[in-house]
Length: 320
Image (tube, rainbow, N blue to C red):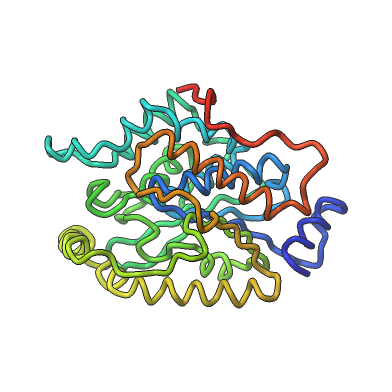
């Protein structure tokens, strides 16, 4: 059975579908994760979240994944287009004062607690298992933090650990006796972990269009990141060195699984607007939300209920 067939059967008959295990995997990429945020909202709008067994998120994709498991993916689009949230979270000018470009502590401990409250207890109690992915700073291993989520404080810490971009977001995050950096450094798309954990079918929400090819970063960026990793996360240097090779292997695996219907790939179209990791352009981010929502709605059209909520407009949705 293809992933769409498994989900359709679950819609009609419930979870008894021959032992299938369906995982949703969300890619990150800083502000580029607005695409997967819109896609997650489409999944929620179509009522598909309860049909999933697991939801995996990497980097900023782990934030979108948490909102989806909480049943609040549509509401979670608002912070992406909130001027106060984005400026409080991403501000390159802070470097001049010795601060961090990306302030995840502000986002998770302030925004997600006071301005746009995330229902942490709901996520932890959900029958759909939430899997935030991070990279162990000492070993470079891609690690599923789900077994470490023993309460809301641990969940908030895991959200920061999964999303701590090197250089931009400060030093590794201490959690559960180890130190962590961004999950995307070791496994940008967590399909290997999902499959190792027993997933038989995958819905993969990407933030790069299909025409994107893994490539080395500019030389100056490579030098800066390597220097930072040697100082703060020496175990990750090897993962950084081999990241393009690993990314190509992941794309090959996904193509193989997609050919037999076990993977449903949802990507922004090739003409989607380019969004940088640290963009705070609210109009651009709103457009990325719309494009992501539209792409997922189209890909999941065979499962669309007769009356689904309208897609996002990008205006008038912020409550922050």
